Amino acid sequence: MCAYIINLTMVVIKMEIEHNALACGKFIEETIDFDFYRALFEPVRGKILVYIASNGKKSINEIAENFTQDRSVISRHLDLMCRYGIVSKTKINRFVFYEVNSTFILDKFEGTTENLKRLMEKTKCK
Image (cartoon, rainbow, N blue to C red; front, side, top):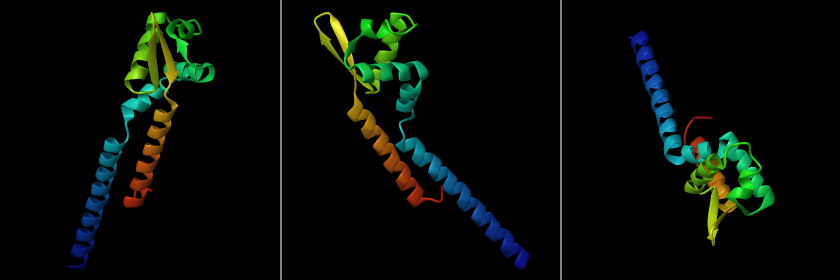
């Protein structure tokens, strides 16, 4: 009987651990914008971001002339970065200017940090 209780206890503990791991995974998937971070940390986009952050608002031509990729490739990167709020664009006459949306990026980092802190407090994912 004692062995049965120990085995049953081990099964319950294992189920609790597995449930906790699933809950942690689900919470992370629901609260972290992985698409945003993939867009932000792709190497070329990271370099574009650093360039714009260092040099201020720039046109596509000004940005593209500092990279080896074609202007069309840089344009696609910038469009994706706009879609995820990493940069914003302003059209003036025929020119489109891009600038870093630093407030949005920092808010996203802070939100992610707060969500991870809550996760660590709520669960045993430490």
